[in-house]
Structures are given as structure tokens and as C-alpha cells.
Figure 1 (tube, one colour):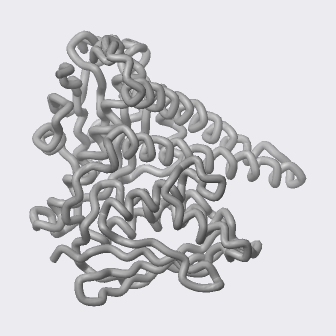
Figure 2: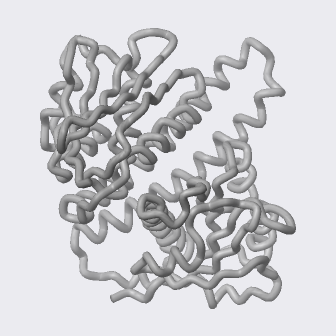
Length: 365
């Protein structure tokens, strides 16, 4: 077994992230974590750690400053900024300073310590662990021993290649998007449309790196990770909120949804993220408006995504009915949706002429 990734976690008293250093290590199989309030970049031995995780809102400054100091002192040491209070501007500044990745987490709520909150924190810890390991393998693969893998298997090569590509593409493109956004005040009115197109396409391509990573995780992982009870409401809330941030001109509404757990896992958010992306990107009108609603019927929950793209040629119906990635009718996003929902023992379909997508999941409460 490969040595675990060694992580230095810079905690932020002012940043209400859900995952603490102890929680990250206790729930992870692939990392060893040391917590610290404020690292001294000049005293840090880069041979001791494979990656640094840094909260953004620190008691004596911010994570961007820490990233800059660490990069100056140790250029090869990857740094992941993890925050519950950041936005696109913070992400741009962090990546510009040299951060390897930027992870937005949920703030710790008033119900901390309850079973539901524990489940949410566990899911977020798993996500953070994956991103940390990816950063360490891409920026410092010689530390973790990943380059020592010589089994020659297709799965291992695919996993390693995708991890590096999605990491590099994501970082470079995030910087491009960030710099393009800086130019907004410097362009005249005639050029604003061009700038908006650059930003829209850049953000959509960033989304594709997430889709590619999730799809490879399914393929390499022989279907999906273990299915377990997963809280539906926070997953939908995160998916809707991130789509609002990604598609600033779209209206994405979330109605009340059942408070329950369903058979799924940490990739459930990817299901709704990709369906919302498809609905907004292929909207028939000029002002995309999408509504997400859920209802419980006994041991089943149905989540409807309404008001998105029409489906006159049946593209989405065919895509969600296929089971092979190489089918001409199936894009990677909808392939990922169908594969995950099938693995959960659920169902996904297009219900009416307006191309409303219905996702059925099994209730585990």
C-alpha cells in the first residue's frame, strides 16, 4: 500500500469550515494530518509534508497571504485553500498567489453534532481528502510514491493521467478566468460581450474537469463507491447554490424538499450539478430559469428539475436511456448521471414534452 499523504492543516478561527484537521484524518484512509494555527514558512521543512491545507479567514490575516509566503519559500509544495466564506474573487486571488486548488465548503451550522450534520461533514471530508491527494500527486508525486506505480494496468494509468490533467487544466483555467474578470473595468461597452463569452466558456470548461474526475472515479472504482444513507436537502442546496454562482444570468430556484436520507454517496451532488448544467446550457430561451422541487412518496423521493432545456429531438431521453459512454447520443455528463443513479438503485428519466427530468431515489430513513 502506498504511504499516506502527509498534510499540514492551517486552521482558521474566523473561517467556519465544517472539516477540522482531526475530522479529516479520522475519516480518511489516505492522509495523515497535523493542525497548526499559523505556519512559519521559513521554518517549515517541505520534506515533512506532501500538501498544505489552509483556511482563508485566519485570525492574523488570510489564506492568500499564507499561500504567497509558502510558494515563495517552497515552490514545489502544493497548497489547497479550503474555505466556507470565499467567493470567485478570493479564488482568483488564491490561485494567482500560487494555490494548487480551491475548495469551497459548508459553514458549520447550529446543529453541529447531530447525526445529520455528522453525515454532511463526513461527505465534505471525503471530498477534501480527494482534492488534497490529487494536489499532492500532481504537484509532488515524487513525495507520495505515485510515480512508482508500474503495474501497467489501464485503470491505474487512466486514474493517474486524469488526476494530473484535471488538476493542471483546472488551475491554469482558473487563473485565466480570474485574470479575465480583472479586465472587466478596463474594457469598453462594445467588448463586454466578448469578455462575458470568455468567462462563460472558461467556467463551463472548469465544470468539465469536475465531470471528468467524477466519471473516472466511477470507471476506475468499478461502478461507484459504497452506497450509504445520504442527506438529500444539503446536497440539493449546495448544487443549486454553486449553479447560481456559475451561471450568473440564470435563475435557479429551489423549492422545499423532503428532509430525509436517501441511498447514495458523496457523488450525489454530481448528479444534480450535471442535470442543472444541462438544463441551463441548453435552455431554449434567452433568460434561463430552472426550478428544483422534491416530494416524498413512501420509500421513494422524486426530485424534479423543471423549466430547463426543451427536448424536441429526444436527445436527453436517449442519453438517459443509454448505458454506454461511447454512444453517439450520450454525453459524459448524462452518462455520469445515469451510471450513478443506477448504482444507487434509483431511476432517472425525462417526464414530459418540456423535458422535465425526474430523479427517483430510495429513502433509507
